[in-house]
Image: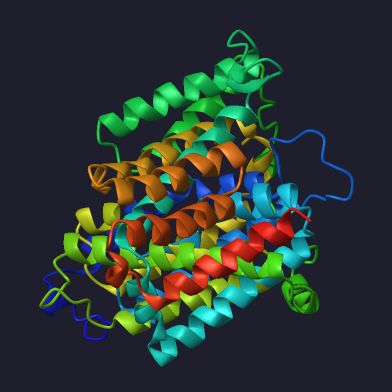
Amino acid sequence: MKNFFRFEEYGTNFKRESIAGLTTFLAMAYILFVNPSVLSLGGIEELPEGVTRMDPGAIFTATALAAAIGTLIMGLLAKYPIALAPGMGLNAFFAYTVVLGYGIPWETALAGVLASGLIFVVLTVTGVRERIINAIPNQLKLAVGAGIGLFIAFIGLTNVGIIEADPATYVTLGDLTNGPTLLAVFGVLVTVILLTLGLKGGVFYGMIITAVAGMLVGLIDPPSAMSDVVGPVPSLEPTFGAAITHFGEIFTLQMLVVIMTFLFVDFFDTAGTLVAVATQGGLMKDNKLPRANKALFSDSAATVAGSVLGTSTTTSYIESTTGVSAGGRTGFASVVTAVLFLLALFFSPLLGVVTAEVTAPALIIVGILMAANLRHIEWDQFEIAVPSFLTVLAMPLTYSIATGIAIGFIFYPITMLVKGRGREIHPIMYALFLIFILYFIFLTE
């Protein structure tokens, strides 16, 4: 094992890698409970006619298994200390835009995730992925990431009534004296303090403290027996294989845009995370990432597996940097994280404790972290500022990540051409410009 992961070459050992794997798991364990809440539309009491919920128990199992499979492949194949799990942002797009907004059945949405994963595999194996990534301006990538952050935070704020609808002003501050809302505010405050103090896994610990506080004040029913904490693994039957059986339903213009959104955002997340983790761990060589294709294949394979199991796009997690900061340098850290996700399968009864008030702070804090991309956008260049601003603003205001991307990708060629910077626009961007124009034309019919 030591030779397989080349411990001596990277100056590490079993203990250090094990601690790193545990650290990464604690930093991202919140996804086990947040993902079922998001995908099952847990914060929405009344669903529109025709919209159905996914089974939270099945999502929990799919989330844990997808994370374990993806992280294990990353550890054994690419040998990087990078963990994977269903991505924040893409799960919100899946649930709130595709299923709730477009009215697309979740089974068809899963088929879209499967299609994006298969395309990702092909693009990675053929090497085309790199060209597509390079075709999309870095400024728009940053704007997409920041916009998703605002969108996620907005969902968290509205799910617990911190922000609510208002007939005069569209949105307004909610009733902060309401018990559940006040509990969510407490959760945000606690999580902010933990992260400000630099505590690794602060989001996860914040959820635990919020849940305990909710039990103490009577807002959450505490576990009454050990069976309310540890129990059998929930069945995958409600979601398993739905992506395959409904694959024939993806061949529409609307689903094309959905698949492209899944694909693009996964591209951005994966590329950014791989570079960030590798740079922090000193794993880059000549400004390039060794075994990059294997790392990308791990990500795409995890998405395919996760969609078949019953969850949204699985992607590399930036929380892996916590494990690297704890000394992780090899894929053995990922193996440890994967094993911990498998052990977590037996803690599904805690889903009853992790209510919307407990998960909302995690959504808001993750949104804040993603919005950090705003500082890198070249706001002093108007031709860049316009598409970037519209991308960021449109996502929360239209309640759609896809719409935000579409607006930004339409305005970018226009402002760049008018500015005389047409040569900087890749032909792929013109193709996307036309696709998104058609998307709006047919969407309004």
